[in-house]
Image (cartoon, helix red, strand yellow):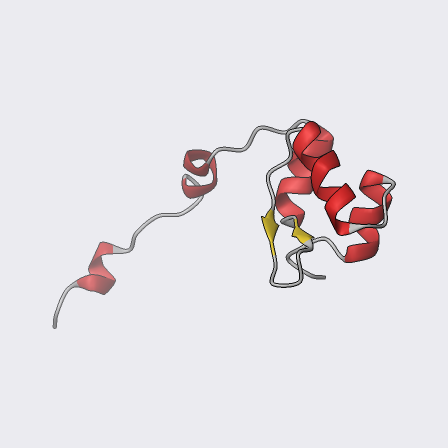
Length: 76
């Protein structure tokens, strides 16, 4: 599975085929995206899932699942 929505998925989301029209729709609906060299909007799949399910996951919540093994960082 791609990290970004596929062009067909963005078309399904917006209901629009032209990249410029898709970008206008995304702007009007306050979506975060990047534009690739072809002018196509790129939307991270994780952002899409969060936005569509109204989940609010912060970086702090994601990082709290990890811990640092300090002993592994010590020199022998």
